[in-house]
Amino acid sequence: MTRFFKTLLVFFVLAVSTWIAFMSVLPILFIRQIEKKHEIVLKGERNLILIQPRFKVKKASFVWKNRVELVQGDFEIMLDPWAWVSSRLWAMSLQGDGAKLRFLGDWLRKTGVKEVQTTRLRLALDFDDGEIREIRKVEVVSPNYQLQIQSREARAS
Image (cartoon, rainbow, N blue to C red):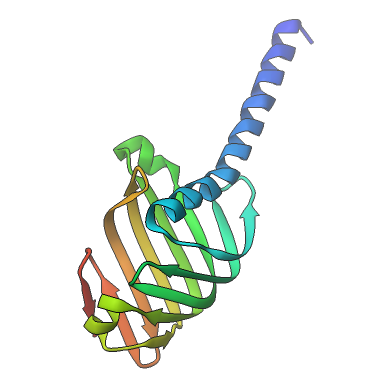
């Protein structure tokens, strides 16, 4: 094997290894930035999914200001780095089933519901420098309650 091909192979292996490490750690770094900016403390067992910009959180809990509290649930957080390339926004989605939510403050007054045991929880957000730019989709479904948010304003049914 010539020296050129050996150098090319080493470069390729280093590039792939760096990409895998970056994609695996990126969601954790992103979530830490969100936690700081929005005063959220996400607790639970975080499990990275190698090669992909996503991770799972088991037995998770958090409080988001005076809006909502996740009492307990398992979910997966996915980050779309290609959205940043195309629009300079970070696209994040969260999916989970069987989460227990408690509405607080304004959301409690708007919905009139204190606690919800969900059968499905879906969330899609766009961030710009850690700030929420757009809430694309929020879906909270339970046997007796459904909440959908298409923008920053909540619509409950």
